[in-house]
Length: 580
Image 1: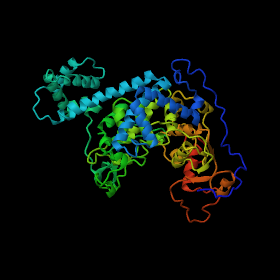
Image 2: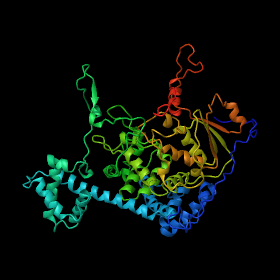
Image 3: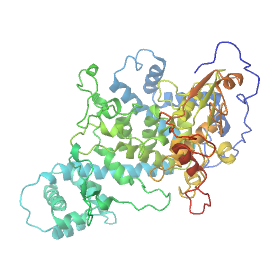
């Protein structure tokens, strides 16, 4: 909604658009190993909160990249500026390769910038160990053991005893076997007998009851199952139920105690199994999870395919670079994988597991289990957050990401002021993009919105664990709209703090709770306060008012208002005395 052309008292009130934050200088961090920023980079924390500081950082990165790889720096500059070789003239696969190449450099720059060499090396080592397990799975378990039809004379126990004697270390037997298998395969002619016995052991691990129990939980023996679209949820008769009702498998039940998070997400090994299950389709334009599943790949103008449930397979609404993200992660580049994902999805804490799965439905695997992309995306984020200064790495990549063709750095204030009504996912995403473009944004929400701790705004957060609260005990902050008050135990609302923080630190963003657009604040009020535009992000649902007498009387709550009040007054807590 755009303001009428006439000046309607534009400067009648100071809305604080050009205020200067009293951001304390983060002294001393460049003076010792383990500080936030390495000494040779020469930046201070408050500089990175400004458009000028981010442009300086961008120039510094390009200078660094030119010294490291001039060809990649030139390709990236062409890609950004729309010159020959830019995305407009490059194939999709060429763009993907450019981003993958530069992302590896960007990861090294970030590691130097935050002086986290030890932690980053440990993460990479862990990911590469999982890669060894996945190579063993592909080359031995799936390619040979699964297809073995010859009789096996030795028992599983006999082969296990022999195999233990071959391993250098049996503390982590899965990793030990994987590495030994890859070592044997380097000279298979010499190690043919050992490889054959290993294949036999793996075949028994797949098909023998004792073997299956031994490798239960090993990702190297976790094989995808076929998918029947008509039987997506397995059902069974409820025992002893006289009404003939059905239930899902009780082994999948999770007991709920209050509002504690019930879904802890995949382990690292499980997530890496999904990463390596992906076949990395970006290099031949087959990444339907990102771009949508076409009726005919050779002619996308024919439209998007439907599955057997009559759902359009549109892929990721953001066209997040999923295949590229997985390729980098599979090679041990955890930070680079996050940076590539954030090219199109800077609000990545608000997506992923338990939020969306359009990408998963459009996966190239349609007749067997698809890649669990939401789980991998969330794991990639949380592994970076677990690093020292992980919060700051996310925050920086939200405001500066040199892999983007556009909006790669936050712009200076352009004189345009925007009011956003509603601070849910639509509202805070709009706030991000508008502030990146140089607009000043004021967000309002009908919910009360709690302020973030001053220490988080004015100094870097060293550990994400400092921001984590138990969902059953946390104070409802109000920021996030339906993501705050609507979903309960399935999704970790601590992620909302990351988005709230990256916006609250920006010079030209403010947020106010307890303000209802159309009630507390009218359209005419917005113009008189100096806003040029109004963005209404108050929810996609059509408002439903019950046609009953006195349905809107004072004290009567509609369902959505009741739910908001239930959550935000803390009525669900065991310690609460609220009447709700």
